Picture: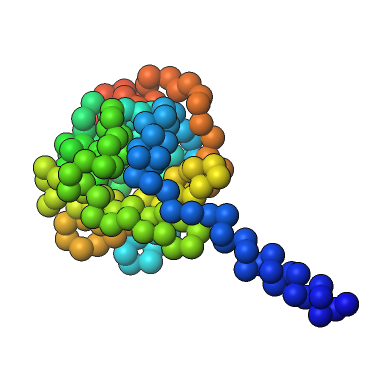
Length: 198
């Protein structure tokens, strides 16, 4: 009896991963294009092993907000085709970069098409997640983004930014909620500047 029970448990355990499967690029593009707004807790791990936490807000197309938890006072805003990094330890205006120069532009685009020529440079399945590595085919020197998706339901769970200098930053998402409304000011770089007296 014990042997039969153990055999049944092993059968269930070994069969479980079969429910997960590699998702097609078309299915993942459809998911990203349907993701209009989202809020999540995030854990960010940098190359040097440092870990930061906070909350992430996404409004597609083109808008993203990283609020870092104390003692960090940093804030990263993507809006109006720009990325602004606010850091209270630095004086003056935020550092600002064109959004198109960051791999985040790929998931914030109005129309995500992972099947576009030369965009995806890796598409694999690790037994649990579909992993897609993508770059902007027009400016591959801007770096790459590696996206990790679960299925049933399809959900973005993690991404890794691989920059042009070889460093990487991992962002894991937890407690994701979608389809809410955000005030316009949440993503407004000029409003944030005024609020910080810059």
